[in-house]
Each structure stands twice: as structure tokens, then as C-alpha cells.
Image (cartoon, rainbow, N blue to C red; front, side, top):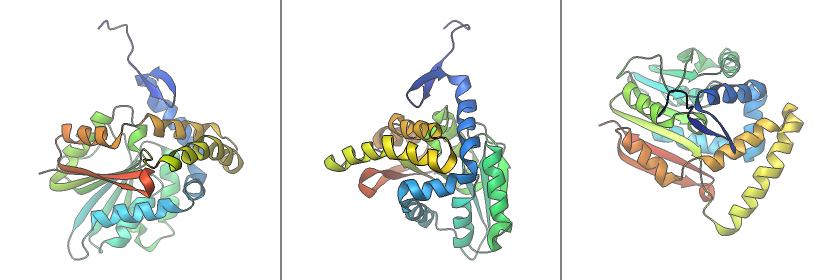
Amino acid sequence: MSSSVRENTHFGYQQVPLDEKQGLVDDVFHKVADRYDLMNDLMSLGLHRLWKDLLVAKVRPPRDRPFAHLDVAGGTGDVAFRVADAGGRLTAVTALDVNRDMLRVGRERAAKRKTGERVTFVEGNAEALPLPSDRFDAYTIAFGIRNVPRIDKALSEAHRVLKRGGRFLALEFSRVDTPLLDRLYDAYSFTAIPALGKVITGDGEPYRYLVESIRRFPTPERFADMIGDAGFSRVDFTRLSGGVVAIHSGWKL
């Protein structure tokens, strides 16, 4: 391939140069950071809380020994705080995000929480984690992997930073597999969510992108293959809420 040819990828339903996607995604989250968790409540009718609780239940941080956890694309701390709360005083959580505004929100929330002192916020890219190899007992990423320009690199980095015996867990929107529900879900996603985003944040376009990005994400079966290709073993996934979301799992053995 000629060096002058630029590789493209998708940004929602648009085709954009691969090296520009991260900046476009950053712009989306700069706009929604302060209302991100509120919008999650409204968009999911509160179900995102249950989904995240189920994710953390799979992490199972111990209460009686050291446990190092990494939550990627978790700038507001929503999953990181859950892990810290579920684990004991020796549970240490690193919340990593590429977006400074999301991290700012997370640090502000941490200052108001008893377990916030056990959560460290780090700015970094999922494709090139500024963290040592074989460091973490578990890695989670909730609703973030679909926004990564090079998913294969993010999965490879997840495998690198996990200890032997560590677990990778991804909570992500999926493909609704119930005939009537899929049409209702599409109608709600493309009409109500952008309109709701405009009311709450003043701009509906970031939420139009987020809805489109869900539709462009690989099927659960294909994503499971990608996790396996990154070196993980015992890969599986569990659909939740009629296939609206899925929890994907893999182990570094």
C-alpha cells in the first residue's frame, strides 16, 4: 500500500481517516462529560446500574487480600467505585480514560466518597496503556471498547497488563435478538435518545454518534473471536436485557 493512502474507519455511519477518529471521539465526550452518568440513567431507564453491578459481580474482588483492578474508559469512576466498594481495603483500582473532562468528573466524585481514596485516575489511551505488563488481576471496560479506533490493539494491551490468571471483562451494547423488541429499540435509539441528549446536554449530535456506533460494533460472536485472537482463553459472553447489552469475558491463562 502506498504511504500516501490513508486508512479509513467508521465514526458512527461516517467514514473517517483512522488517525482522526480518536480526536472525534474525544470531542463527543468533552461535550457530554458533566451529564454523562445522568444521561446513562435516562437512556437506559436506570438499567445501566444493574448491568454494571452484574459486571462487578463477575470481577469478585476479594475482601481479605491485595487486588489490583484496571477499569479502562472509566473516567467518571462509575465502575471503579463499584469495584472499590465490593473489594476490601487492599483493593486498589486504576480508572483510565483518554478524556480529561471525564477524568475531572471522576476525581470530583472520588473526593466525596469514602472508598474514593482507593481509586487512582490516569490519563491514557486503551491502545497504548501507560502501565506495566503483568500488573492487574482484572480489567474491565464498560461501554468504551466500541469507541476505540483499533480494537485489536486495545485487546492486545489488555492481555499485556493482566497477570497470568487475570480476567478481561467488557460490558458493551449488543444486538437485540427479540423480533418485536429490535424494532422498538431502533425507534427509541434513533429518535428519543438524540432528542433527550439535546434537552439534557444542549446537543443531540453526540448521542446520534453513540447510537450509530452501537450499530457498527461487531456481533457478540465476532467480538468473542477478536478476544480470542488477542490471546485470551475460555472466551464467552452473556446477553442481558434481550440482547441490548452483553458481558464478554476472557482469561489470561
